Image (cartoon, rainbow, N blue to C red; front, side, top):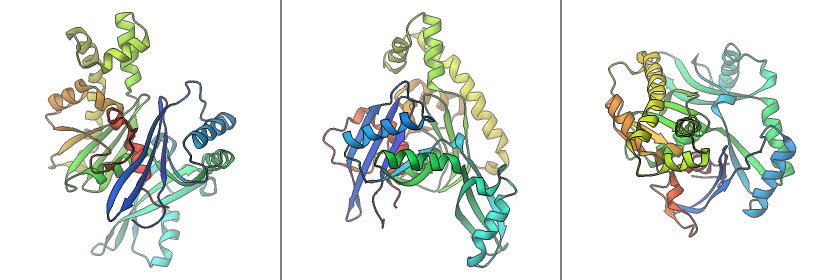
Amino acid sequence: MAGKNLVGLDIGSKFTKIVQLKEKSGVKFLINAQLISTPQDLNMEDSVAMKDFLSLLATSNNLKNKPIAYALNISECIARYLTIPMVDESEIEQAIMWEAEQYIPFKLDKVNVNYQILNIDQKNKNIKVLIVAAKKEKIEFLKEVFSKAKLKLECVDVDIFSTINTYLENAPEKNKLVFILNIGAKSTKLALLDSTEPIYFSYIDFSLDSIVLDIASKLSISESESLNMLLSKNKDPHLISIIESNLINLQNELSNVLNFNFSLIADRHIGNFVLAGGACSIDEIATYLATVFNIGVIKLNPFETLTIQDPNFNIDNKYLFDVALGLALRKA
């Protein structure tokens, strides 16, 4: 792992996560993992509000002038695979951009396009590429607010790809077909991962907030009480039935994804569902998925293979750091 260590910064609707690593003799050490409440009224499209929040983070966590990696929501990006004919190395970028123009619904001068070469097929004389495009105005907005907050934005990634990065860092076997689900407060990000290659990625509207609101409505309690009940280990049968009635929606969404991608996974067995994010703390979700799909469910612990040196890190919060760790694993 050559290059500068990046600070992973993941600003979520509920919590902001910060991860810093160091590496020595091939061993990765977690030296800082912070979980900070994101202001409820934070408008992430408001440059002043974002600058003020980032400035607070920079000062309180000693991040000024440190290289930062930040993730966009997959819903803010256009990501897809391209296959281009085999060309000379000097012509690859031009060929990718020409092909990308056919699929991006904006003029190329209005977007930032990054790409990763996934496979060079010598037999069929083509190259498989993953492209990700984001509006330039969004990238320029981020550069501006980070700069005003005295933070060095070195890398902009995509949240689901950061989760994949964390999974690959921790996976004991990397030759399986797995279905990654990052279920968060506002949405669920999905990825079908074949060995180390994402063959499908997207997001759906299913969220933990929707379950919280449904419990609050049906039991006539506050949202904070509902959340506490959802996270509790001892649930009565009525509460479990409410949770499972919501999980039917998730089941239907996942079934649609699997049916849509049948041609990619035909005759293949999904080794596991990989559950990431806040949903890992709700046992009923893993149990439900394992039962209705007859597929094993593993919970992604981002720090499984790391040596933890941060004495203040609360291990109970480990599941929330999948995106932040995936960012911190990047190199400038």
